[in-house]
Image (cartoon, rainbow, N blue to C red; front, side):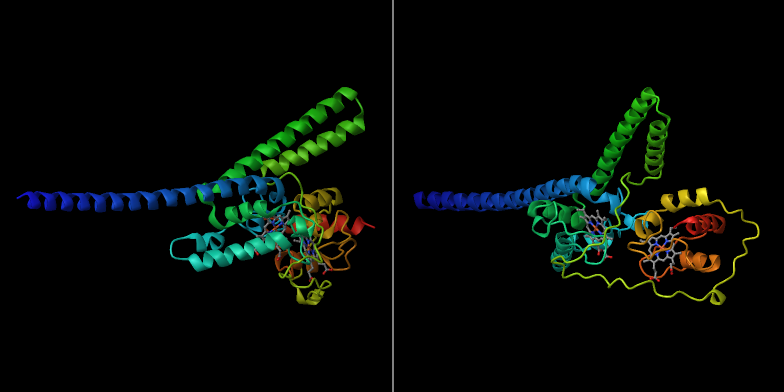
Length: 316
Ligand code: HEC
Ligand code: HEC
């Protein structure tokens, strides 16, 4: 009888032990998952701040790059391809994508505008900064791209406030030239802001000689495009060329980013006083070769192309 009770008590104790062990294990798994999740959230959030401060000029406020607007010279980073590996069951792909993104940010891409960012490569970011950016791009944890977008808007609103102050100060000074310059800078910034574009305009510098194992295609001199007789001929009879307007269109469409402020060349070839005919130039817009983005007739109608063409002919 006594032994019987003891056996029951022992079984009970054992049973409770198993339950609590199970409960503990269960609880621990939950806790570990949420700690990991917490790390991902913090990483991606920091990445969003770094992105808004360093990368959006070329990759766009939301990381959509060229997919958002042709004047953004870099590809989209905010894509399902980049977060694909992060999803359930794609572990191998996750590590692979992370390494690819990490390498690109660390080393840049030779022969493109993507600069190397690692301090060791002359860049401004340390190892953990790059880690945070990789987290943003490959996980988008907590909707970090939305945060990056919000931060971009805050930063640009502050820039516009600053430009308004500059204009006010200029108006007080009464100097006509200073007022015009300040008013133009403000108007240009407001226009980009309204279009959802980052206010700083991307710089066209081309990277070279980095650690990059990732070489872009070597930049060849402008390949000869089709001859005039091989492109559709566009009648300009109804167009009135307006070079001033052409200059504005050249900048508002970001042509200057690749071709230089006076068409002197950079990522793209020299196009000042291009010897191409108008129809050949229009053909290049619609069927671009190499790195040049496509501009459709909806984006830049033929009459606008003609204005830009007229301006290009006035350059040195
Ligand atoms: C001055 C413009 C510029 C800036 C600033 C810039 N990038 Fe880029 N980035 C590019 C260009 C151009 C490419 C495409 C390179 C190519 O053609 O291979 C690129 C490519 C990339 C790629 C590879 C994408 C892919 O799918 O191949 C990643 C990742 C990237 N950039 C991340 C960043 C991050 C993060 C920052 C900020 C720290 C940044 N970039 C800042 C211009 C820029
Ligand atoms: C992202 C960079 C980029 C942007 C933005 C860009 N281009 Fe280009 N463009 C190029 C490249 C690269 C080529 C050379 C293609 C080749 O090698 O055949 C080119 C070629 C051209 C040519 C033909 C030049 C020749 O001699 O064959 C014209 C004209 C031209 N671009 C005009 C423009 C205009 C106008 C805009 C704005 C509406 C513009 N481009 C925007 C990169 C760019």
